[in-house]
Length: 398
Image 1 (cartoon, rainbow, N blue to C red):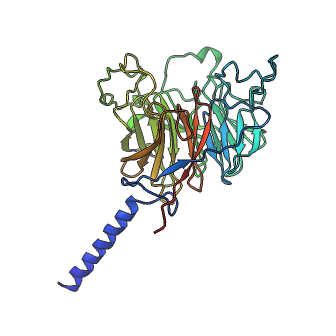
Image 2: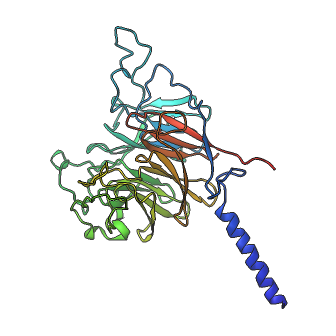
Image 3: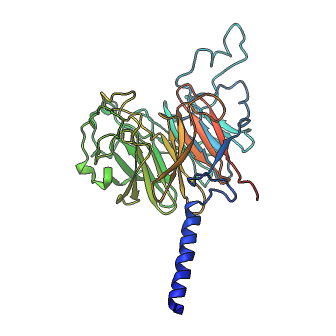
């Protein structure tokens, strides 16, 4: 064998070894992986600590982890049970509970560090949906009601900036118009791109990008990168579910439920009506479709899709924080799990959670985030009303 051929074989062997190692990389060093290469997690049943002051835990619609690994979450009291908020007035003097702040930050031990927000707070949304703690110590809050917007707050709750773009009262119930960019009826689901100082907003069948300092519109696109002018303003048809995936659709299929941006400048948009993540460049060029549990019923709840509507598998998503950001963690409020997806290939590797009320189980997970230590945080809506911490399982030393 010639020296040149021998060198080529050695290089091929090294590349093959590197590829094998890459496909089974951990979120943190020493983390256990299953046979499919999915990183393993176990719930911390003692986190967080009980909220102080008899505050009631309500629907957790958003979670964000800041640069110090403090966990900020929305505590939206839009559907309290009668016995969850009457502790302050009930004549029987129940021990629980009273309405707490709608924004709470806790540390790694589960202690409350910051708490504010609510209907009496300046500009606070009536239907809070997203919280983002940025690297400069600011906190961005949004809501899904027509007159809610995206508000930038200081860490202690001072209003710093208002995105505005609210509709006039008569336009709040206007027909769908994916070509309108001066006002938005729903600004609740957004992402902050600090690198470019831009806000990405998903609404109707499109993604819109605005300047994060001035609010000026910059660009937008629809499903598979189509220009705004080509996006349909008609409802996406429902379908009869027979155990397979929904019909293929070039448009985005509502409801669009999350948008995330990776370090390598890929944009991930989740479609609950299609069990699909579409991947783009930041300029709107389509790159990839990722299907997650595609045979799950979508465009409505139940066995037969009589009307277009939500459900499906795309509730929220977070990208892992390892150097290559190898994994997508997708919160699925239909199957009640967190899916673990290989980011590059789009292959689903596994899941954790499962339907139930015990620690480590989930009921309507609608929020998910991750910290620098690899801990995954989930938030539940409907009657789940809790936040949980899933810590990496470490591999046994040999």
